[in-house]
Length: 490
Image (cartoon, one colour):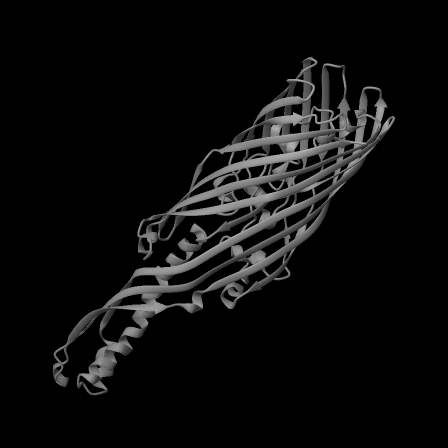
């Protein structure tokens, strides 16, 4: 059974979001900027803000579809959908993603704080469960139901022989020497899965101007992880056909008999239910530099250290799920009550540069590397990553007037996940994004950011060999995000 971490709904590496405010939505390349809204991406640049207090309040709304088309031979036995390919559609919605940034500047010093959802991907709901659910159950029913039927047939044949007038012990002996066979002809089940994953991050730190054009930042981010996984497979039933042949026994005056029939079983013992809450806490040290070369060029670098997090489970399972979780090789073992699940947030290296050829125009570029291979996961899953995540970003802003600034950006993300890493709920796809928007300078003290971005994912097919034949999962995603932010100087 495949319950797993809800994958990232925003921009960034595994369990890491670089999308922190509406300014990012309209221009992804924030690392080379000197702005209050860039303090997450370039915290050292905050030293060059004007003296006083600065506050940014933001909200984003993200809407995503996570579609998996699973092809499996036994799906043709599903009594509601006889096609061997089934679509499992996940709806991930996050209508309210708040964040805030505050900074106080005094001469060479700057103190800042930033709160946002630094990891996770909101919540995702699969109304029909997942392909791994159905493939597991269809395979189990295909193998076990005929065995159970064959075990019952001799007793049924014996009862039929006695009712036909064949006395014992002849009926018992004849029933025991017959041949019996059955096969699964159909199944039905009701499956559901919902996952939620939030990593709330509060970052605080200080920046100091080492030189008039060079500043350094030191800070920490506290991460509180709150996850929940709720799912079931219930109302399971199976249809089957059977046949038998009992040989003649002349000594008993019995000419022999054969027959066939159909039956249906309700399999409540196979029902599964799970509700697991996971919580954990970790601390991320952060360092950064900003070099304001001149009025045309600015460069920055930031390094976030790996965040060690152990998620502790508080789980409720029915007996069937508990039996599965007791097996250390079962995917359900990581949801045992009281189990500690390692889910580190990877280290991040971020580099940025901004070039302003004329006063009204700013050209931006950034690079991210997430060190996913070095962040430990439950069961050593990081070993299934071929290479770290890389992101390349370009952006531009132009002041149409003293009131309106327009911006646009492009980003490409390349994950290094091999096929063994991918599963129904924990899948990331390499992608590219486009974003754009405006900043409205409403007054000298207030500006408003409005942005929209969409993500285009590279679909991927993963084939898994099973005893019933190959299972092929076709992964695809769609994502749209809107953002609004209010930036105030005091």
